[in-house]
Image (cartoon, rainbow, N blue to C red):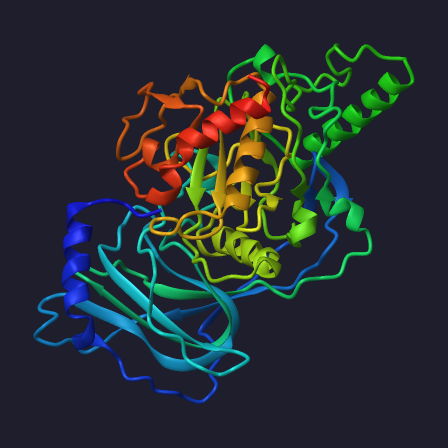
Length: 467
């Protein structure tokens, strides 16, 4: 998530040296509503495949915004701009980030925040915010056609809070700089818990009558929700006929749509247990309609969310709902960017809607979102070693997903760049089948401690495929 530039590193060093000079004295004000509230429209959910059933939870949530204002500087700061939000009481939130008007602009500097706990009413120490969020949709992708795209920092999980203070130091602050505070809404009890987690599948890990996208065109395809729902219904009908001995499981679907799920071939790995979008409480009214599919997964890009490590696993549904709302409402994307997320307890969560067995195109690795899967380990693993449970979950997920197209986790794959800061548009670099975000983009993501373990993860995933 951290872009590596000489300018950013130099600015960060200067900012660290003068942090004491720009420190703001906490000043509690009367309870004040944030200056803006972002809310939004209606839709349907997706679990194993796009569902025709309405969303299970109408989980409430809210985005509050506050503009950053210029603050008095000192001689130690020099000519650098200082902006922030003085300490104040705000509506409850649990995740925050800074956004600005131009998605191509960079915030070259430092951002720090402190928050007040909603329960203990104590102020936290100052915490750094990763200034540029390097997870991004590809150029010319539908995610960039929403008309609401904004530049942003990485989101930071704070836990339930009702007070905030922000300070930003930069050589040039981007226009429209604001603080976005996300209330992910409470967890909702679901009477139908069977739909919340897809259990590990040891016997038929890949639903034997799936079809491989690689048998057809290599073009990416946009599918509306109605088309996806009709396709899902036709697939269910075909499965029912197959069980009754009335259909050939190897044939093309009779309804004529291009199939989206991928047929496993050769080496398989069992599907791990996966908490669905319904399980973490995705409000399907937030995302934009339709799905974007790509023709088969060739590689996995591993990320860390950079949202912090100080969370409890019971809070993870709220964290994911916060990231989801941040990506959609604050950044202007169609849906959450990651295809899957993994918490430090080793639980796997469905990310972007469209079907877990399908090749859904996400918004996670600028330039290489086609033909790849983006999986984020929740936390910051630059200096902290990822928990073993999370690593094992990553191995199982990668082994299963790559197995759907017969990919060896120890192998490589050629991908075509749509353009980014490292690879020009049309370049054809080769990547490990399990790569880190930094392999495709100039960033520190997925953190040095996690990145160093990727060779071991490739070997372990291969063993799960019985290679």
